Amino acid sequence: MRNLYLITKEDLKNLVKNPMWVFYGAVFPFLFVTILGFLGKDGYGKEVTSFDYYGITLMIYSILSSGMTSANAFMEVTIQKPNMRIVYAPGSEKNIYLSKIIASFLFTFGCHLIDLMLLCGIYHMRIHAIPQILILFALTEIFSVALGVMFCCIFKTEAMANQILGVVINLLAIFGGLLFSLDGYGKVIRTISYISPAKWLVKATFGLIYDHDYSWFYPTAIGMVFAIIVVVAICNKTFRKEDCIC
Amino acid sequence: MNSIVTINQLEKNFGEKQVVKKISFEVQKGEILCFLGPNGAGKSTTINILSGILGYDSGEMNYKGKSIKSCLNEFKQHLGVVPQDLAIYEELSAEQNVKFFASLYGLKGRELEEKVTKALDFVGLLERRKDKAKTFSGGMKRRLNIACAIAHEPELLIMDEPTVGIDPQSRNHILDSIKKLSKHGMTILYTTHYMEEVEEISTRILIMDSGTIIAEGTKESLKEDIFDERQFILEVEEEKNLNIDDFYTIEGIKKVERKEHELTITTLKNIENLDKIIAMVIKNKAKILNLFCRTASLENVFLRLTGKSLRD
Image (cartoon, rainbow over all chains, first blue to last red):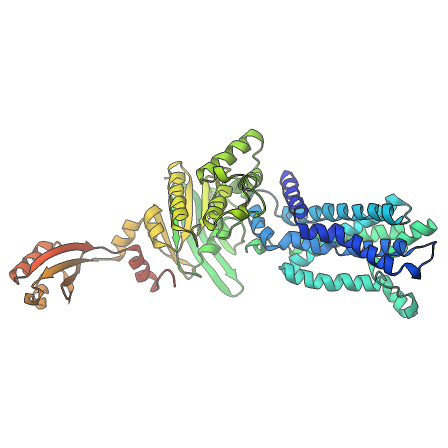
C-alpha cells in the first residue's frame, strides 16, 4: 500500500510538471468551451446559453478524453523505463497500472474542476445538483483513465493505444451528441445514440440541472461503476510485467 | 563460499523458440560472477528471469535454499538491479531519483536520507545531487542508474551491461565502484560484451551460447582448461640463418612461423622446451633481440568455445 502511494505521488508529480498535459487537461477544455460558446452564442436563447450547453457537453468530451493522459502517464518512454525499476522492487506489480489510473484521475479531475469553476465564474454557466454532477463526472473520469491504461495493457504501446483510443472517444462523443445533436437524424439514430455512455451522461446531467430529474442519475452512475470494474479487470488480466522491459 | 542463488534446470521458451535451455548454476556469496555471451545467447533473458521481470517454463530458482517463487518479496528486498537501459526519471534530480527508488524498499526518514547520500557519494554524484538527471552526461546517468540500484544496500546486485556507450573515465569509475562493492561483501552478477572488463573484475565467469552454459570457471582456469598451447615470440637478427625444420626436432613444438625479424613458435604448454629453442637459435647463428611468451586471452577462449567473436 505504501509503495502504491509513493508511485502514485511520483506519477502525479510527473503529470503536473508536464506543460503539455497541463495545457491539454486544464487550458484546452476551457478554450474549447470559450470558442464554441462565442461562436454559437446567437443560436441559443437566454434560458439556456451556448456556454450552458457547451460547458456541459464539451466538459464531458474532455473527461472522456482523459484516457490520453493516462496512456501517456503509463507508457510514455521516459516513464516506461523507470516502471521497469518499480517491477524490480518488492510489492505487487499491480501497483504500476493502479498508480497510473489513480494519478491520472487526480490530475485530470483536478484540471476539470478548475475549468468548471472558471466557466461558472466567468460565463455564469448554470449548474445544479452539484454533488450528483461531480459524482457522475468523477466516475466518468475514472472510467476514461482506466480505459486509457487498458488500451496500453492490450496494445503494449502508447502510440497504438492513443490511436485506437482517439477513434473510440470520438465515436462515443459523436453517438452521444457531444459535438452536435443527433436528435434530428431520425428515430433509429436516436436509439443507437443510447449505446454511448456519453449520451447517458448528457441526459443525466441536463436532467439534473434543468428538470431536477434524478431518474437518469442512478442508472448512469451504476453503469459507470460497472464499466470501471470491467475495465480494471481487463487491465489486471492483460497487464504483463515483462512489457515494462524497454 | 556459500551460495546465495541456485539455478537448477532453468528453461524459458518464447513460443516455439527455446531461449534458455535447462541451465544450472550457482551464485556464490561475495563473488563477481561475469556472464559472457554473444547477442542472443540468453544472458539478458536469464537475468530478467532472476530479477523477477520474466517468468520461466520449468526449473528451480532458490534464494538461500528457499524457492524464489515462494519468497519473491524477500528476495527482491535483497536484490538490486542495474538494467541495460537507463531506468531513471529524467525530470527529477539525482537525489530525488535515488530517494524515490530507495523508498520502494521500505526505507524512510533519516535512514533513507543517509543511504541516499551514501549511494550518491559512492558513484561520485554527491556534488551534483540537486541537478536534474536530464542535464547529466551519458556516463553520469549510468552512475545514477547504479546509485538507484545500490541505495538500499542489496546483498545481490545484477548489472546488465552497465558500461555500454560511455566515456572511458566513467567506465573506469564504474569498474572501480564494482570492485569496491565486492570488497564490501556485495555479490555481483555482471553481464558485458567487453572482455577486458571481465579480465579486470571477474572472480568467476559463465560463458553462455545459444541458451546453454558452455563453460564455467575463473579466467585462469578457463584459459588453462581450454588451451594446451602457448606461443613464444622471438625477435631475431640474422634470421636468414635459421632453418625452420630444425625446430620441429624439439619436443612439443607444433608450429613455427617466420615473418621478417619475428619468429613465432607454438608449443605444447606442459613441455618445458624454451632452453632448447634458445639453444637452437644460437646454434643457427642468429641473435635473439627480444623474447616474450603469449598466453591465451579470454577472447581466444570465447572464440574457441563459440566459434564467434563476442561482439558479433
